[in-house]
Amino acid sequence: MKLVHSGKVRDLYETDDGLLLMVASDRLSAFDYVLEPAIPDKGAVLTQMSLWWFDQLKEVVPDHVVGPGDDARSVLCRPLRMVQVECVARGYLTGGGLAEYRAGGTVSGVRLPAGLEDGSRLPEPIFTPSTKAPMGQHDEPISYERVVAEVGAETAEELRRITLAVYERGAEIAAERGIIVADTKIELGWDEDGVLTLGDEVLTPDSSRFWPAEEWKPGRSQPSFDKQYVRDWLLSPESGWDKASGNPPPRLPDHVVESTRQRYLEAYERVTGVPFSG
Image 1 (cartoon, rainbow, N blue to C red):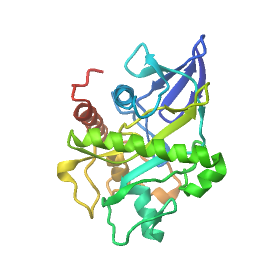
Image 2 (cartoon, rainbow, N blue to C red; image 1 turned 180 degrees about the vertical axis):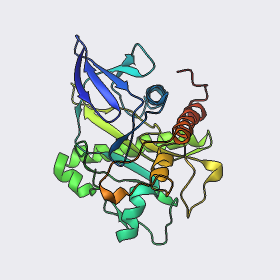
Image 3 (cartoon, rainbow, N blue to C red; image 1 turned 60 degrees about the vertical axis):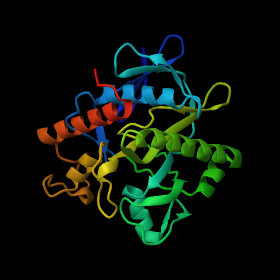
Image 4 (cartoon, helix red, strand yellow; image 1 turned 180 degrees about the horizontal axis):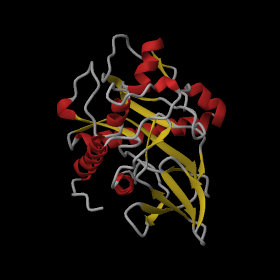
């Protein structure tokens, strides 16, 4: 098969019959760097969790999945013409959205109530798109009006509708399992018939923030089942890394690698309700 794209986490191959084989590696990225070492079993968790979620979302949006690949990390899918907008939905305020809110009271141009804290639940989920930057560059939040200018009013409205519908359905299912989905990012593209279709991955610990509901407490960084744990470690004195220095992050110590692996496994098992088998 022909390698057509290698990203921070996934490698994409073209098959002889024109389909795509998407392989999720064990690589972990944070702050636009690919970290070392890789996280064992991460690729299989991402692929198997995405396949589970694609099944749950069939009535919400069509997806690109043709079927599983020949191992736990791969999936066969239809090619899409991807929309050049990162589609993000937030139900809670944290991360980059919190920083933007603290600076001006808005997130991607959406005005929010005063007095919100890290981890606050929003009055309702909001669509907070961003640019889709090339590898090594940062995605930047953009307003809905900017999305309209980029793709047109009709497509912009569909992007917002689908993104919020995916978030709301995902949050509903996760809540039944004791998990808060704070936010999520999805990828959408047009299929050969011009239908907006869900691609890439969906509602995984790489593309979403998962918090244990029983430990949620606004006003602090929340315990999580996602790579926020690694971000927090990198920014801690223990790592010795200065994010503003321009130097790459340090190698992850064994205890951070294993703790990250366990968080990914727990996310998979709590959400799907089945043991991870690889």
